[in-house]
Amino acid sequence: MYHGLSRRIAAVTGGALLATSLFSTAAVPALAQSPAAPACDSLNMLYATVEADVEAIKVGIPLYEQATGTKINLDSQPYNALQQKVFAELAQQSPFYDIIIVDTPWMPAITNQVEPLLSYINDPAKTDAAKLAIDDFIPKVFYDTAVYNQAQSNLEYPGDQSKVDLAGIKDAGFDVFGLPLQANALTLSYRKDLFENPDEQAAFKAKYGRDLTVPATWDEFTQVAQFFTRPDQNLYGTTLMAGTGDWATDDFKTLLAGFGGNGKMVDDQFNRVFNSPEGIQALTYYNDLINVKQVTPPGTTSSSWDEVSAAFVAGQTAMSMNYHSEALSPELKGEVGYAPVPAGPTGARGPHFGTWMLSVNKFSEKKDCAWQAIQWFTGSDAQKAMLATQLHPSRTSVYEDAKTDPNATQFGNFYEVLGQSLATGVGRPRLTNYGEVDQIIFTAVNSVATGASTPADALAAADAQVKDALVKAGYPAK
Image (cartoon, rainbow, N blue to C red; front, side):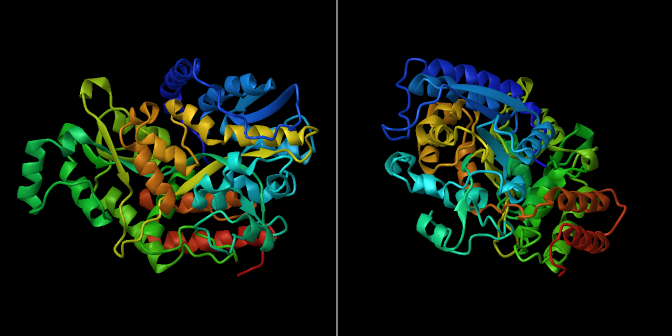
């Protein structure tokens, strides 16, 4: 599952201090509520420690308290502990937490335990539609994150997803189960000091007959990675997240989509679509980078998000892929640039993405107040205030503002690329047992990376295991 971003702690802590100073004398963002909105002395919020950028919510909390007089009692926990806590609290129908942050792969299992929000959104006594600005959420992010059929949580909304259509959502039998905040997508990082070096540019052109550019295709990616691989200098072309963890699944599903397959891996009718010619091609390409072209540093087969970030930041690789901005070690005196992950042979591109949402606990005794609060925390003003901590916004307007906002431009072109990547990203399958399916797939990816299996054999074995897992979870056999 999505966890482990410890490398960001120092950066976001510093950003939180900056944000606090920048907004201490600024006008407090207006609360997205009607004048008659209920008042509560306090609300309890359960949140992720690092993965959903707790420093960002810490920027927003005093502003919210100033605007409303409602105290927010924040309880943040690491990913695995948080997931267990969320599921335990909801299973016990505990009213203690009013607001719960939910990672997208959890929602299919808990749609009956968090509050459906369409009735709140459509009630003018509870929602000022102009302030909520529901159509300002990035449509792909909104639908992937928050829109579910409560009775059949495997289903994806079948209508047009190019805009948020509340009437269409209701008519199709779907509802809204949270508001998106912290939208993560896989992006490409590269060392500008290497790519813009005249000597490197001349050497690349002499060798390949074209200019050295940030790779736009996976073929170009291979070429550039080979060019910068110099083991005698402890320099390699790229990192990959081939260790046993969700990160390896993310790598694979990104390549699967890029090579023309369905990056969801299991569709909403439970068809297993990863063991396919495109899947074999994607995993063969992945294996070639590691074991044939050998453009990754030693230890790649045990790397997670943390290890690949550390390798890139230390200058061990020319390129990397991750979910957040990076800063090279000071002694390298270089800057980092960002680009969308490359496209496949047909131009297809589908970087993995997934978003956290703020949801209202169905068993809370303060649901109206909790609804008012999640509107505020996911509002455009609040998200802008959180940019300094590297919050990944879920609203189109915030990405527009990020082009000139000093809180965002300090991270180079990261926000521009993140916004582009969210628009083309591919989320996870909607399964109550996604964690089990995820483990089967990342184990298969790792087995290929370590040379223990061929791509075709690994995917065939994973296909059979996923089928069994789906049947055991009560899904129909396919």
